[in-house]
Image (cartoon, one colour):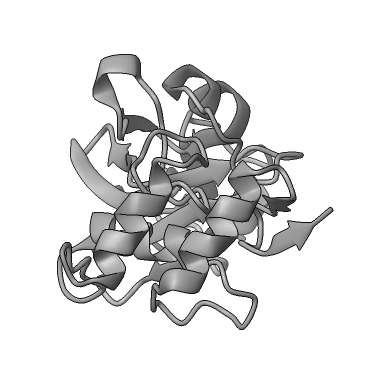
Length: 225
């Protein structure tokens, strides 16, 4: 049987998984039944390789979580990331929270570019280095931070009040992920994320700025001391 001559050790290649062997070069399906040795006693074996999928990898041990991921587009996954520290810099975001699997890289666009601050609305693109294309996009949500400065402060309250009065009309529909990130960050009521911002949300942020409460960044819940 040919199987008696198949190499026992599979070759390794960076960023690839070796699925097995094939007698056809370029085949993407490993075979298990090699059949009988041909009459000329000549046979070549080719490894069947599959690329490791390029995707965002949240570092183990952190509180970061990807949520509300939209996978309806097979070519581009879009979602949001929460559970991050406030006053977050691009350097800290990369070194503490984020990684990537496979032959990929991250492109981070801070919400406050002049200071490399990564608050609500910061865009994180996952790039396939081989295909040179974006395969995933995520937006940062820091609960209570509406203006994107990665802090929960009194400056967020007027922004929420403008939205309540209809002066800004943050969208949660269509191609408006940055605006939706602001809606998610502002909707702090403990009755669940209903994507509706009202005056109570501004009141909760005021209580946080007065140090009588804090926000659990993994859930968005306002907890009073």
